[in-house]
Image (cartoon, rainbow, N blue to C red; front, top):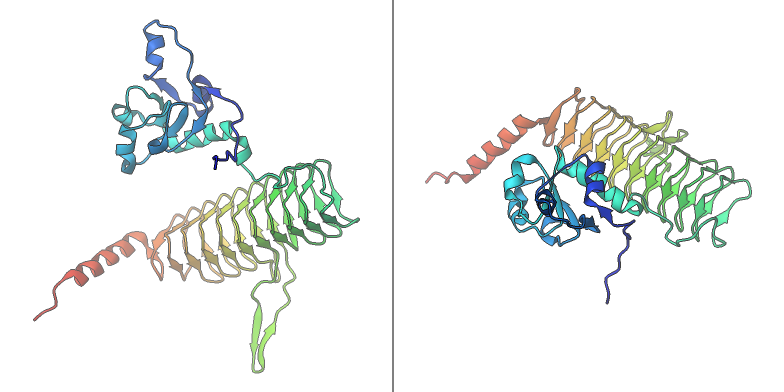
Amino acid sequence: MTAAAFFPLARPAPLSEIAQIAGAEIRGGRDGAQASGELAPPPLIIGVATLDWSRPGDLCFYDNPRYRKALLECRATACFLRERHLDLLPKVVVALVVDDPQRAMTLAAAHLFPDALRPGSLFQSSGVSPGAAVHPQARLEPGVVVDPGAVIGPGAEIGAGTIIGPQAVIGPNVRIGRDCSIGAHASLTHTLIGDRVVIHPGARLGQDGFGFAPTREGYLKTPQIGRVIVQDDVEIGANTTIDRGASRDTIIGEGTKIDNLVQIGHNVVIGRFCAIVAQSGVAGSCEIGDFVALGGQSAVAGHLTIGEGAAVAAKSGVMRDLPAGARVGGAPARPLRRFLRSAALLDRLARKDKPT
């Protein structure tokens, strides 16, 4: 079976072009021949790879001492790295010196493989597929792509350049901005979405929040009459769920990135440019400030406030408000250094021999 290239190269790029895009300084390697006066064709970049899988024509980056051995054996055409690591790079590899190699690699890869930045039409078509069900009262701007099996309800509005994947469901009166991507089998109800939003397959936005009033006869369901509002440039991972508000809106702030399998409860307000990693959960009515990071499998109890720039370590349980800039870990979450010291102390105690 031949290997399939799912993301075609836009075009081969000269190394000088890559350096300009990433703000890198070219050092050594194959450019040394030009420095000595010899004429040589400029290196072309035709792919990206990890250090240990690289080969001529590839671009890679080094940003972690764990991969020092792989850097020493790198076979790529060029590598982004910091100046202090130049002596580790093989002489045949062109050094692209930058302050932040990962950022530089991201910029270069986006230039080489622009189709990988957001999901495209799985049917590789344009316009509305005959196999889609679009209500006559829905309004689609020119340039919207709707794949087979998608359902778009009455009163829905979808902006130009947006792609609706197969079997996706867009509920009545939902608003979706321009240049968005809605993945296969995603469902959106009671939701307003800004521009350039990416929602991956299987995500559920706008369903009921978990609202019940306990009574002697059992749990009484509380009407959930709010909305989900997703601002511009948000990305929401596969199989993530975001509940609509009960008495106010659930809001996801501009530029926030939410990983796969995340649960966002009703009435939650998440600020701008946050990062919420896989399998995390945020209970109802929490307010999360800008630039907050929640590690994988972290949990935030209901009705809490997390200040701007706070960071929660993976598998932590936040049980009380966090001030701006806090760094916490553990369950219940506590200042990160205290958590790490306590874990080290318990480990030392566990290693001691039992008294005879």
